[in-house]
Every structure is written in C-alpha cells, then in structure tokens.
Length: 331
Image (tube, rainbow, N blue to C red):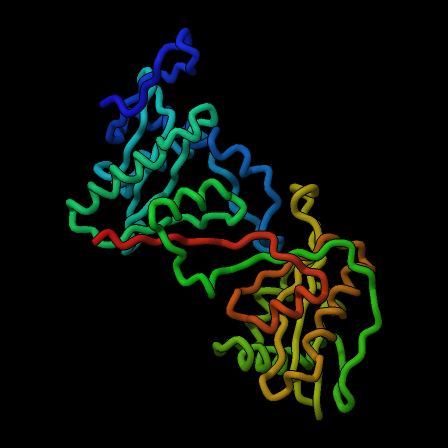
C-alpha cells in the first residue's frame, strides 16, 4: 500500500520515494534492529537521569534482533514502513505482563516529519481493537527530553499515566557552600551506626513503608561510594525527625557520564515541618558535595511533593527531565 508520494523535482518539488506499510515479519528483525539502533543514537548522548542507578547499557543491533524474535512481540499489532523493501519506520508492540504496548517506535532520521511512525501506531491500534484490547501503553519509560516523542504521543491522544507521581530529575550546578543553621532545640548531625534505626524509622514516617536498618545497610551503606559524613539527620530530644543523604559518585567505567552528586531521601516528619529543617538538610548535603568537587548535583522527586519541589527550586535546582509513561484507552 502506497502511503506517500510527490510530484517530480522538475516541477519544483521534492521527490519523496513511495513507501508502503507492512505488518512486521520475523525475517525483518535484522533490518528493523538496525533502524531502531540508528534512530536512538542521539539519545545515547544524553546525560543519565539518575547517577545512583545508571541506565542499562543500550542494546546492540544483535541484542535488539533477539528481542524482536522473542515470543512477547505482538506481530499482528507491529507495523513497519518500507522504502524499496528497507524499513524506514516501525512501531513494535509487545506484551509486558498484563500490559500490551509499544516497546520501540523509531523512524530513520532522513524520513522524519512525514507521519510514518504515526501510521504504524494507528495500524497497530486498529489491530489491537480487533483483538478486544482496551488499553495500550508505552512499555518503556519515555525520557521527557525526547520532545518529538512527546508530541507524537499527544497527537495520538495518549495521556500521561499518573503524572503527579512520575519521577522527575532536578539538577543544581555550581553550588557555593553557605552557612547551615537549625531551629533552636534541634541538632544537625551526621549518620552513625547508633542512628541507623532512627534514620529508617524517620524514613518510614515520611515516605511510608516499613523498612528496617538492614534496608539502609544493603541499599546505601554497602556501596563503595558511601560516606556517612555526607548523610545528615536532625534530632529533637534525641529522636531523629529529619533525614537526608548525599553520594559523591565517580564511576570509573564511564567517568564522563557517571560523575557528580546525588541527593537521596530528604524528609522531615510532619509535626516538625515549617521550621526550615528540610532546607538545612539539603544545604548540608550540597555543602558536603561542593567541598568534594561533586558537580552537578541531581535528585529525583515527584510533582505531587509540592513543598519539596519549591524548596529545591529556591536552592537553585531546575527540572532536567521527567520519566513519562503514556497510556491510551482504545474503546
């Protein structure tokens, strides 16, 4: 089926080679894998959104081919645009647990702005409707810095899934140390073994859950870059009522991309808020990181944490990107 064509260049117009849309077939795997790998090349140059948990290594063409041949690929809902029998755009649908959705949507650089990816997605949606699928999602996190991707999903009437609870990365550059003070009757201290239980109890009170001291030891204290002098807490009458933590991350595998500071778990118990304790905790972390030359500093939060976001903005953090998941009802 021809989906695009144009008059000859002799008439003063650009020639657009006719293309056709086809359902995905297993023998296309190597070519579609090459297309996906090339289309996402620019994304591999973006800095990570979380220094603590770097992104998984980008898949090679061979690894992408293996995934494309896997059982989870929904071949009847996956479509490819071909030009001279070479894939130039594709939308690959997969089943991920209870969800059915888009694993990769890609268009070759020279063929963008022609609506090809949109045609593939719309064809896939029609196939899913015929199967009785009522909901489709993006099974992979969509980086908020991919503006073209966001525009495509919005144009196709996809919405953000639980937008107030999505992760958002904020970044602070060039912090200059400043004085830290806490309200009278409160003490700012650094983490010791004797405070681990109090730290986790405060963490549970702020963020919910029921983690114990072993959780903190496994998740953070066992890391080679953990230094208790960068983990702060506020005490009142001996009780831990506020917490924060800072990690100076230097990854020898990729020193250009995985270096800087990461602030984790900033929180103050509800009955102690409004005293400036949260600001003191963040400033203490920023001062500690600055003295170690860790720059930039990143943290991950969520939009519904309005007071925290306002505090971070006050201290010079700016939103770097959000981690989106899109969803659409097909009914």
